[in-house]
Length: 265
Image (tube, rainbow, N blue to C red; front, side, top):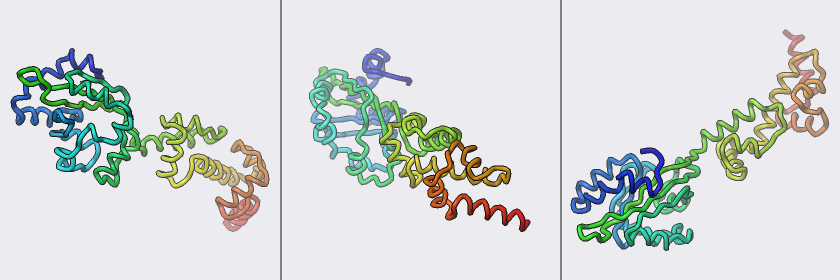
């Protein structure tokens, strides 16, 4: 279907087939069910009357019985808080209304429907509301068509950040650049990174650096200071303490341990 805005939907004839189906609820339900993008249909009072498979799959195992006949778009606290009720009303008065790049309130949705493991961290959608008219050109229903613009499921973004840190470990740590590599804001990235790895991005970076130092210390031709320098680190008391925290021994003790192992072999 490609990228749409409200003008595209009207001109490309996406709305037209729905206009022809208002008198046949069963056929309309089948068409909506097979539609590749999430759709929810509302009665004129804002109550949900129909939602398709794509809509259910978007948010996980939501039972349609929890939504149909129960959810009312005008009573949704997140929509009320957005201040968009007046714009929303335009669709129920017969206009096509387009909302671009809307951040979906996932926490509210998860809480409302008891979703414990929502596999989406952040979701941005283009939302088009369009009326379906009856034979007398009165609004019979309003349909919401949702097209994802950006979906952050978390794991993929964090893997990108880990790869960025692992390949650029010699460079100075930069939270902004690392978050950018993941395609996330710094605050969201930091929270998400710790959720998936159990540590902050900086702690992960330091782990990589210490691991590289340990590799360099295997080279008996390098002094401890030179091993650190080879990893773009100036050897000092602070870094020695960090090394000991990560390995259990000081850098010099680690080197002695390696020497003993070498002589034992």
